[in-house]
Length: 259
Image (cartoon, rainbow, N blue to C red):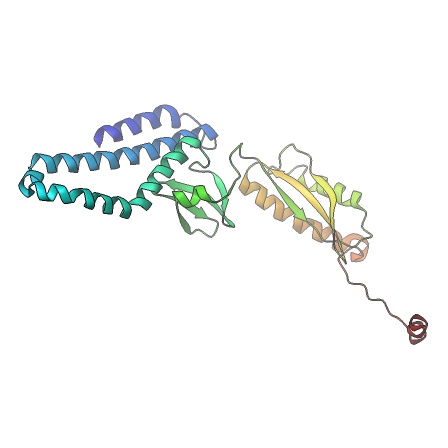
């Protein structure tokens, strides 16, 4: 176990420490090292227990009858340990295939979270409410989830802004460009504004904004939404805020329609 700890420390100091914390390669090596260390410790512990049992002659004292029943006992133990063994194999699969790494931003089961730790049986997700979501490895691999850090830290979010049909979309484009122009949380990608959705009472422009990382993009998303609402309130006295329209029909129009 000391040798395993020594090797883990040496690998971390050589390959993990020199890299920036937000470097994807840093996260990949850290995840692989941590999972391999824990699996190695589990294997060492099992081999050590087996060696001690053999050395003390436990099996010889019990005799042939006990050894004969050991096969049936082994089957029962294997069945009982199936979830644990399955999660251990899934943990090794996570380390090898790299779907999620320690420090990645993920959305699992509707929960936004940071991958805080990957043990040999489960993954610990640190949610935005400062709680921990414990997910077995087999559960994590069997269900789809979003990984916002897979190809880098920069992410995009969509601001959906319900407005009145009469709105000039170019004015929204100009305002969004002015909001994100000097904001350090924004990337060099130009924001995109498109009229992507229309409901029975409102038009809903979709505004794509890009942030330098997931935290910055979240706060930038909220800031853009807040400033656009204030802008709509001041624009022409709030004429382009969402509203309901009612058609008033006189009695003569109703009689004409009935005919």
